[in-house]
Image 1 (cartoon, one colour):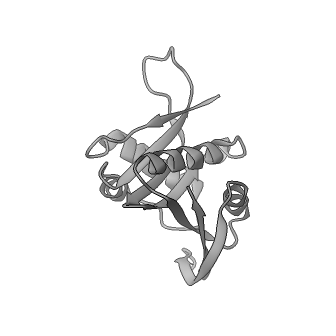
Image 2 (cartoon, one colour):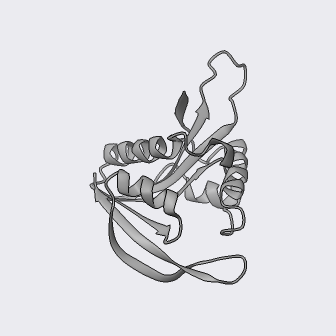
Length: 164
């Protein structure tokens, strides 16, 4: 069972959480994009408009928090929300963690007054596209050459949205 933990509102994002999330992002997207640094995640997830939800395996008897297996970074501005990144550790993918994180981000955004959620996803990221389409997102456009890969190639992003 995976337990979701809301690590915000802490302002600023605790350094240990930022470091662990940055390392997880690097592992989850290895070779695909430049990962967020801990400082970038801390700046984005300020607890005012930017938030970080984390997933870790439930272990209530442990004296320390178990390692992260996934996270979602998102922001809410007025009645719009945007998922910035969903990352799940490679060894923990296909367990429904991404789906749980997206649903939790939607719930939190709704609590904060958002009526719509937006995101971009790489056109070739078929597992993420399936997750979002299964959660009710619809394509609303395309950003040509949005992602720059480490090898210099560019890839389109699909712009998705759904009403909350």
